[in-house]
Image 1 (cartoon, helix red, strand yellow):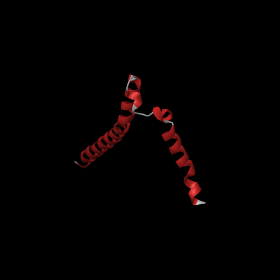
Image 2: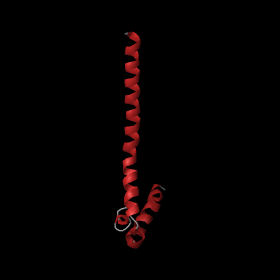
Image 3: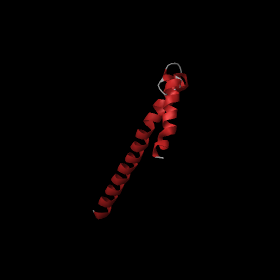
Length: 75
């Protein structure tokens, strides 16, 4: 019964290997002629860094404001 668990994956692999035209729409193939695809890929690749940088910047600014506010009250 466990051997039937892998049957759909094996059938899909055999289908792709038997008919390679089905798998022609890969992510790298889209880079040849469509500049919009390139810009969307660039945007999506850079977005995690932009979000992390924004959050880190907000935390740094918040920390500096809180730190400078404490010194002003103690002095």
